[in-house]
Length: 140
Image 1: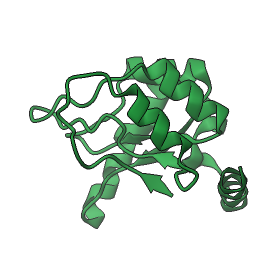
Image 2 (image 1 turned 180 degrees about the vertical axis):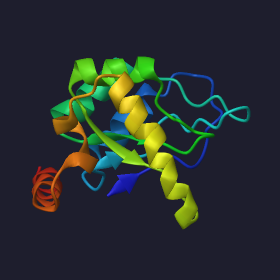
Image 3 (image 1 turned 90 degrees about the vertical axis):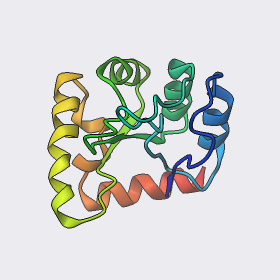
């Protein structure tokens, strides 16, 4: 299950504890568009990203790269931290129509530029691997 923040997205103070609580929620497998950033509209939330990604890795949960051009939610710097902490990544487009699925190319490019291990990216898993991963996260 994908969990996303949809309120209080303009807070300036550190949101680390909010993220950690979301990751500890047993129903959430993927933390969706984590910063809540929208280009030229909303800066997005701040946190101790090393802590957030480390907990995601410990719990074997994923953090989403929102590939929508106005969002591009995780920067290359943040993806570098995610890579270092070993957390899984999920690519999504926040699409509101079929034509927007092409935005996946932006996320794939980000994964390549950040030198992410394809084995840590949910979208590269086979269906059986993905279902096995989802079940293992749910059972924890």
